[in-house]
Length: 182
Image 1 (spheres, rainbow, N blue to C red):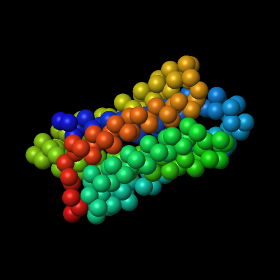
Image 2: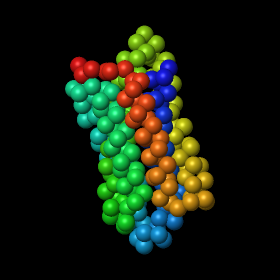
Image 3: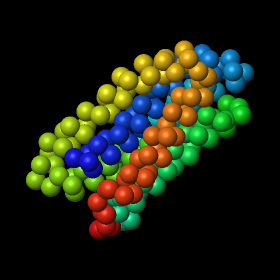
Image 4: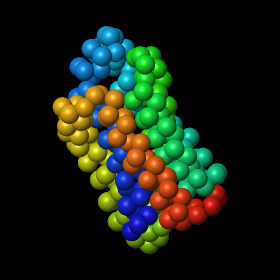
């Protein structure tokens, strides 16, 4: 169950970021002195790279180990969250969001593999519950984003991932099963 909480939290963090940005677009538009066409790439680039990386991440988790890829995905997501929050202009923000999407996309296949390995005979139930996390993140994202935007800068929608990511890295490295490569 600890394994489920660790990988579930990581998946929630990734799914939150697919929608949390939407409420901050008007603020980002003004603050970054850009236009809607460029700003749209902060959402599109994230989702596009997230989708593109998933099949490759599944293969890499089989080759190099689920835990190793999972922790690498969290590290990539966390570092690019910090970088996106510090982005000096729209162009760098788009780059960081595309790379952040790669980290988020690599989470799902590696996390699903970890859940399947950890729950054995009960994996159908665990994967079913696991599948409900992504829609929850989609619903919570705009609400959390609105709360953050009303009390802080848009940059905090990215910074909020950093402590969560660091805790997940530490706890995941210590408590997740080894998950050797096949």
